[in-house]
Image (cartoon, rainbow, N blue to C red):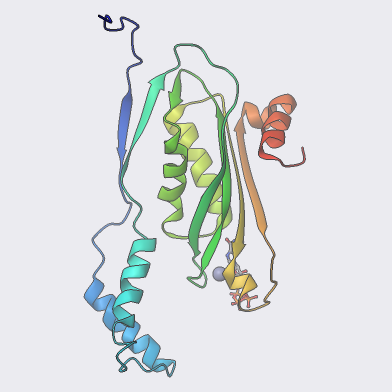
Length: 207
Ligand SMILES: Nc1nc2c(ncn2[C@@H]2O[C@H](COP(=O)(O)OP(=O)(O)OP(=O)(O)O)[C@@H](O)[C@H]2O)c(=O)[nH]1
Ligand SMILES: [Zn+2]
């Protein structure tokens, strides 16, 4: 009979992270406002197929601005792992705060561990937490990096985001296909050329 493993398991620790919204969305008021908004633009909402549109708009924006709560689970870095941990190509969707139109793309988020390592999925969850609100890409990039640095206290953090802003590609200047890159590097990834070069190489970006 197999004996139970006596190898000590790392002790997880978790911080509950919840939506920053101060209160529940008032969907009825948002729906009425959406109906008036569409009517003001000359868009009829009386037909059978559009009758539900104001309500869908209200629920859609409420969803885009409501990040899912999660546990920021970390584990002791018992093996003293001291190389980069990088999640590459995390899908990103957010909403630009100037036009309330989506911007979509990918993020690469990495860190150099200190005392603790992070549950891998949490890198994508932290991104969602800060993306689910009216945003600008620069702030989003910096918020993810600063927050990970404060919570995890790693030796360094790197965040690179590449996104298409539909307010720039579908309307206005209509610069189809343009993507915008932003990055924040903290700690060793900022100060040490070798670490920075390694991070950028693993993200596929030119150093
Ligand atoms: N820095 C930054 N600007 C953004 C972001 N998202 C949208 N914008 C820009 O916000 C600016 C708003 O400029 P305005 O001149 O007030 O708006 P607008 O007349 O609709 O501008 P156009 O898009 O040029 O037609 C635009 O240049 C957008 O491209 C972002 O994440 N970061
Ligand atoms: Zn915009």
